[in-house]
Image (cartoon, rainbow over all chains, first blue to last red):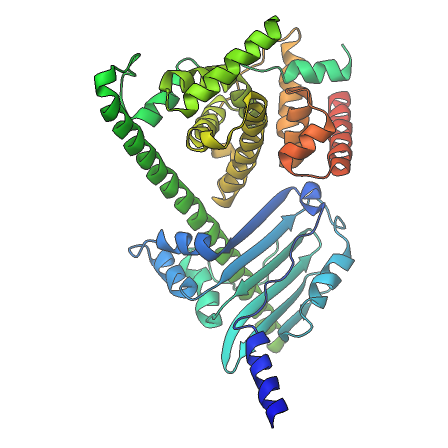
Length: 171
Length: 97
Length: 179
């Protein structure tokens, strides 16, 4: 009984309150990319960013609603001039970090667009989100740590003035 | 001219625009005209100006950093939302085939 | 006292006075280093306006961080480091706004060299390099720094500095040959 009690305490102490932050650094890739988006926002910087969101702008108001409980937002997106500029093994290594996460969507397309969406749950609540989107000329990884409302997050796209998807979107 | 010499030539240091130093000092001091000498009897007042000036710069810098962080946040959210929408659309396309 | 020692002595004194709050001394430091800081930005962005904006930010940051500077050599390297990082950050922020570069509006200033057309082409090719390689080329050929010094300034391993420089020079040579 005591052992169970100790184990229960350890489980509470060691289990993260939220999802873990992934290792998204991919050395050397930025130099090969024609365009890079690199966002690391957590702790005081994320709170500072949220503080500057305006309540009079609809998109910023919606964003504020989403980020208020978040611990961190990490995005790396690399665009390349031609296909084949990054090693598929990079994507495998990223996926390997998510073995304990719950994969909720997998998309595999003939044209080479692959997307995996993972979540980490605490009870009924989503407390972590990871998206790996690997296209022939673009690699995007998103990691969000903290309670997220996926519905609100995916609805944001319409509010940003980007038309909602109708047909297949070729770039 | 060798290639490396051409590079050095193209990357020779350029003079900063006229009045650059004055612009920097104006931003620091918040005055239109920078005093050349500070009389001793005004030393305390000058110290106060420096402290307040530093505080003002700090606020300006804080605002800039905040706006930068906000821009990064909006970019990250846009990109995430876009990827989620695209994925959702793919799933819908497949289910309607 | 030799001329160099006298110069360093003066530089030390100017820094100390600036650290004690002497604005004239700080202005002297700005004048001493404005060309270097401005040029890093100018060659990075190929734009005098953008370079001026970033350079001003660098010196404002210096003003706030003066007490951290230990000596004139440290000051120079500090300025190079902060200028490099601010240039790269500014470029990334401008991409985040998703504004087309065609809308940027800044006209590059032509370099004065023996062959203005070649220098201008070279500047354009340099400005088209990926940001990290661009900064390495600037630090190498504007500031005439070796890979070890560049590595400390940009926070990149020495071997990576060497390989990225090598790659950048290869691209620049090829671009000059094909025009």
